Image 1 (tube, rainbow, N blue to C red):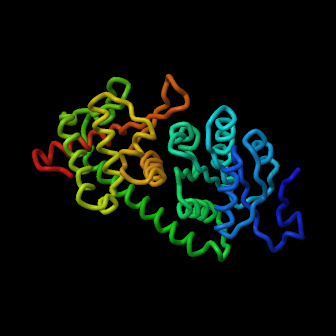
Image 2: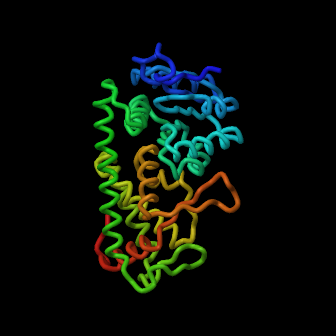
Image 3: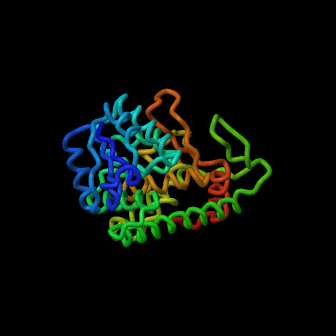
Length: 306
């Protein structure tokens, strides 16, 4: 057994911080993960494949974080992700899951409700940031992490504050006697006014056109872009998977996922499992959010909304 003993149990390690445990399903994935851990100034407590990861994680007494590098999905990945999500909810450890964009929907169904950091096609900086956030949230106080952890904690607080502001605004707009009505299996819009899908599509097109003339990151507003995309889908009676909504956010996929998870946690969006494919999760507007958006469009009338 390769389990790392805690400082209390192993006096030889009394001055060493716990390691980072790596799980990967390819050799190249293990190499990428080792590089990320080394970049953060930490040591690797072990690198195992998916088939042996479940027991290895259970045997691990102490770890700074769990880093999972997935290059492909499958039953073994599904089982492992369910175990990790449960462990993270129970605060056994913090975890980062690094994936390519093609696995966003497959992984989101397992990791959406927990404090797992998901990163998508991430560069070295984004990977180091994700590890720093995971370790900072665990309560690590190592000097090598302090500057990075403080900076990323500030970013996450800013995101949380912004989402809370959006939620408060939507709550003010969504008053009405039929706020909790349902329609067609999707939580309904109550007595909110109808909005023409052409109106919403015109706004989305106008927002995207800005990138022809200016850098797109000058206008990054993932919350509003996702709200518009989900309203458009609701009017058209279409389902929106997690991966599509991340694209609609017009920011890097990792950033879009972080916003999306926070919006779900705040009750602005709701997620629904695909009844025909358990590997996919759909996202919809919460009923109050739908009503607020429709009232907003009714109030602004013919004014151009961008």
